[in-house]
Image (cartoon, rainbow, N blue to C red; front, top):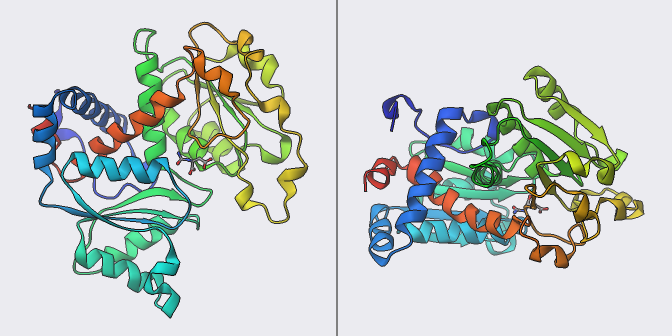
Length: 332
Ligand code: NCD
C-alpha cells in the first residue's frame, strides 16, 4: 500500500480525535484483509499464530455484550490469551484496593488492557498514569461513561464506508443520528470521525432534553461539518443516507427524568421506513429497545446486524495494528 511507512503507529486507543484519515484507511484495509483470510481454515490458522505470544486483560465493569464479546473473539482470532474482570465485586477493589493498584496489577501480567468504565475520561486518565510505570501497556477504551466509545466509532465508519462503497463512499452523505445524543457515547465518538469525510452533513434528531452536547456542536462548527438539530424525525428521514438509531441512556438519569419523555416519534417501524431512500441504511450500536421495530430487520436497508459483526473484524485490525503485526496480515 502507498505511504505505508508514513502512517503513525498505534499504542493506546482512547478517543476518536486521535485518528487521522491515513490511519483509518489503513485500519480498514487490514479489516478487509482479515475478513478475506478468515474465510478459510488456513487463513484462520495463520491469524491465530500472529499474536500467540501476547496476553490481554478485559476489564469491563459496565454492562456489555457486543463490545466485550467481539473483543474477546478478536483476541482469540489473533491467538491472544485473555483474562477478564466484569464486576468490581470480584476484584480486590472490595477490599479497599485503589483502582490504580488494581489496574497496575493487570499491567504487570498482560500486554494489552481493554477497558470499559462508567466514569467519563477515566480510561484516558488511567492510561496516562500507567505510562509512568516501568511497564506501560496499550489501553483500549471500550466505552468510558457517557463520553467516548472510539472502537464503536471505528466500526461504524467501516460499516458506512462498506455500505457506500459503490455510491461514492461516505463523502457527501447525510447522516441522521437519532435518540439520546446527549449521553450516547457512540454518537459522540462517531461525530468526531466525520471530519475526515468531505461534504458529510449531520442531522441530530432528539427530544430537546437529549440533544447533542455543546462540546460536539462546537467541534462541528470548528471543523466545518454542517449540522441541524430537530425533533422531526419523519420530516427529515427522506434526506438521510444513513440513520443511526440509539436508545435512551437512562442509566445516567439522576431522577428518572428520561422516563417522562415521549420517545415514540423517534422510533423506526415498517411504516416510516417508506420515507427512507431506497439506498439508505439503518444502523444501531445495540442494545436496542423499541427504537427499531423487529419487523424492520427484514428490510435490506437494516444494516445493524452486519454492523455488529463488522465490530469483531475491525477490532482484530486494531489489535494487529497496536502490536505492529498488521503488515504480516497485509502481505499474506
Ligand atoms: C453502546 C454502548 O455501550 O455505548 N453499545 C455498544 O457498545 N455496542 C450503546 C448503548 O449502550 O446504548
